[in-house]
Structures are given as structure tokens and as C-alpha cells.
Length: 215
Image (cartoon, rainbow, N blue to C red; front, side, top):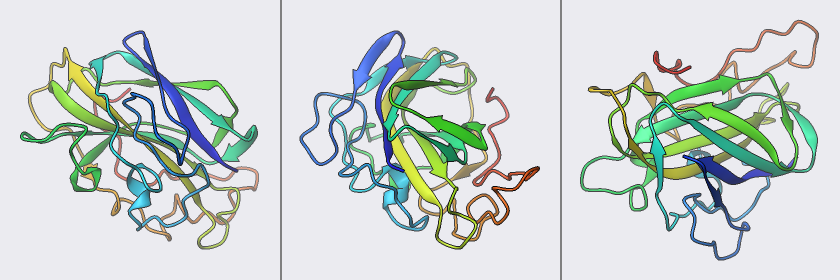
């Protein structure tokens, strides 16, 4: 399969991403050069997608609100999860200038094990209220596992959005956290999944546990 987020809605405003491999419009969605799957969980493309580059905009987003993401793809069902992370941008950097490889991501949403990947399908992610204000990178991905009964069969479709959070009530640092690359390995139970196509298979999500205040 092939897929990518084409737009998202934050605080009621729509932001549109660019066409992979071409000059992007003004957008907070980091650009990639292909919608084909990324296969190496230890490679740099696992962070925000293959060839990801900083976006021009940083979208305002209210803590506790819903983020709606629209995916486009080849209209097929992916066996595997949809997972969303956030990472706070450190002082002295902006969401447009920071290298996401250096960030500590915490998980705010996970759903699976089957995801309908259809053009113009919207997925809603609740942004935690109990986080501090400031700029963040949101990392949103589908992991397609229909070929992951053997090593190296998992297909990753990560994407990153640049946002500026306001209205948060948090005082500390959310966790547990992980970095990309580093959070996943090819042999993790949620990445290498023999038996996933069988009836009654119990899926184990990869990466760190959910942030305790995620919903």
C-alpha cells in the first residue's frame, strides 16, 4: 500500500500538505519525497517520513482539543495500528528549526489492529490537556503489518506536524518517552507479527506506553 496525511484540522482551521517530491505550500505538515512505505525502523526516515523536511508554518492548537487528520492512499485496509506521539521543542529552537531525531516523544494515541486507509478518511486524535504550552512536533503514523509475519515485512507511514500549544495545564514533562529512530526495532512484538492474520490474534503495540493523561 501507499499512503500519507494530506491535511489536518487544528482549532477549526484546515492545513493542507504538499505533493511528495515537489515544493510544498505554506503548511505545518513536514514534507516527504514519496508516499511509498518506509521499511527500516532504525533509519532516519522513521522519524517523520522519507526525506522529511521542515515545514513553513507552525499551527496554533489548543491543549485538550481534537486534531483531525485526513489520509489519502490506495483505498485498502491496512492490518496494523495508527499511533500518534508528541514531543516538546526545547528552548532556543522552534518547531520549524528543530531536528525531530533529537526529541523525546510521548505517545498520546494508539488504535488498531485494523485501520481503514481510504482517501479523505478522517482520524481524530485528542490532544492532552495536561501538557505545558509551547511548540511541539506531533508524529502521526500508520504501521501496515499485512506482510509482517516475516522479518522486515512491516511498512511504516510516519508524518510530522508543527504546532504551538496553548491552554495547557501541565507543569512537568510527559512520559514515558522514546526517540525516533530508537523506539522500534525490527523484532519488536508489534513490528514482527507472526500470526497477525489469524483469528483471535492479540496485538501488542510497539513503542513506549501511553502517556497517563492521554485519552
